[in-house]
View 1: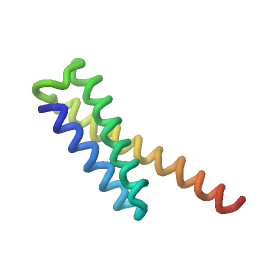
View 2 (view 1 turned 180 degrees about the vertical axis):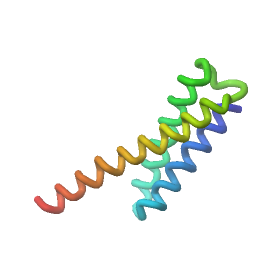
View 3 (view 1 turned 30 degrees about the vertical axis):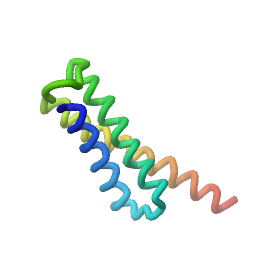
Length: 89
């Protein structure tokens, strides 16, 4: 159950990040959702005693949300800077 919760949570955070960043390209939206899923799974695995089958602690849930948000902020910072550099070149 924890695995499913973390996948849905990460995808939702990635989708909301794409809305806030006004991303319109489907490929970029899917990349943001995949980033959210990957980071939330990693954080959940690390803070849920290494298990994904069973219950999910509130600490692991909170860490998954925080880590997904932090990773997506970093993602936007890197790719926004890269896009600006390509436009200026």
